[in-house]
Length: 65
Image (tube, helix red, strand yellow):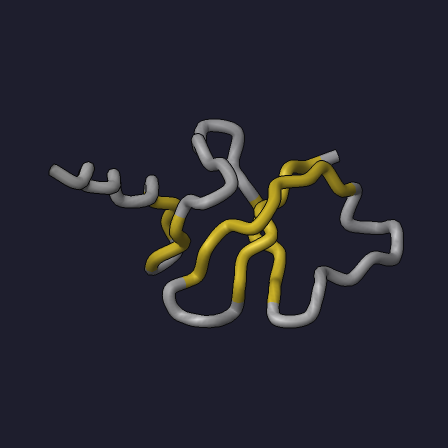
């Protein structure tokens, strides 16, 4: 079993969910999304961006004054 990120196919690509999948059981990601294998040494969570083959934390929001 491997970990996969479910990312949007639009730009910017955003991680919608993370799952464990055997890549053998028939399953299709939701419309407008694709799966990306997550390596064991990679930190990724919902909201991360997927840019040029790398997972990037989302920008930190600036608080209103």
